[in-house]
Image 1: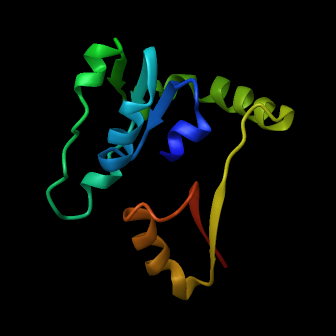
Image 2 (image 1 turned 120 degrees about the vertical axis):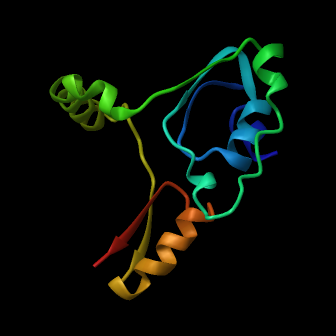
Length: 127
C-alpha cells in the first residue's frame, strides 16, 4: 500500500539490492516497460532459504526489463562515475537517506536491523 501512495503512477526504474519481500512489492507497482537493475540480494544472506519472488508474472504483463550486474564489471568507469555523482549530489539531483545508530556497541544490532530490512536508507553506525 505504501508504494502506491508514494508512486501513484507506478515506478519506472528500480535499483534492487534487497530482493525478497521488497522486490515482490516493487514488482506489483512497476510501470509498463519499467526497468529493474539487480545488484544484490541481501534478503538471501540471512543464513536461511530465501522466500523467493512471487510476482514474476509482472515481468511479462508489464514488459519489465530486469538485469543483474556486478560492480566490478564497471571498474573502468569509476573516475567518470565519481565526478558525475559528486556533481549530482551538489546539485541536489541525488537524495539519500541515512539511518543512524549511535555507538560501536550498537554495531551488531545495526547490522541485524539492516539484514532484517528494518532500516530506512543506508544503515550507519555513528562513532
